[in-house]
Length: 239
Image (spheres, rainbow, N blue to C red):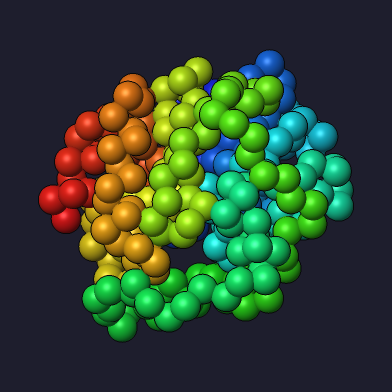
């Protein structure tokens, strides 16, 4: 699904429960997050619609190492040799060496929780493999990948959570630093994501986005938000 020129989300317009994104430049692709194992079919479908082979994927950037963001990373590495890149503080998490504690869940509604679990289970969410090869991000300079993405450390949801700013497509990818549909309650709009380990730190980390100029603010869960970074940050703090 195309959001803007060079900017795509895997899946149909209504399939935004667990998100992965593509940045397309010059026939090559940077992939943001790897969703659930079954989402590899969505990746292949999106690439086919673009007339691109799987080999066009030059890089896989993870916003953090939680299991619903690494789903097809091992498969992609096996097929293409492309490693997953993640912040050093989340490497053990992406390798599934660290289990996330049962904290930071927040309020829940039975229907929303059941819907999220059912969606995940049908797409391999009960048997997620660890990443294959994983490479920590190096420095704060723009990466040599399509779109020239820049990584900004925003700890809180996990120790190694990052935002990924891609000026070429006027977008910043926030992973679970933000949600626009809470998977535990169904609440809509920019707000803090559930399952956050350090909520106060996550809110404080938003200050690191002060210099980011982007229209598209793209979450790991929920619909795309195109109201710009300052308004998204304001709404997250209010919520």
